[in-house]
Image (cartoon, rainbow, N blue to C red; front, side, top):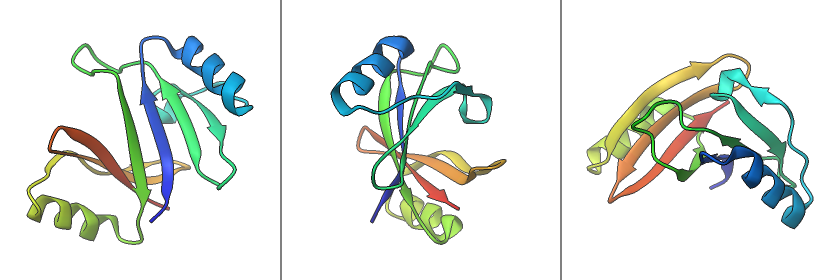
Length: 114
């Protein structure tokens, strides 16, 4: 199991980027519109940290890990069969792969397929 993308949603994007930069020594790029305007930094294990503002009024601050999977459709199906709510079905993000988001037990997480 590997986290491919760690997403932080906050109204204080710049402050969060400064915090992670200062603590972990990572460098964030410019906002990537294909990732909801997230500023991203590469992590030592090859994953990516993305920090972005909420995309709509109903989106709360959250830290959401996306686990790398080989078959996103099978992973989404297994999550649903386990009782998870599929919040965002598998969707392609040009240049990044395919992702999905699910909620289970008050926790938000996702899957990512390259």
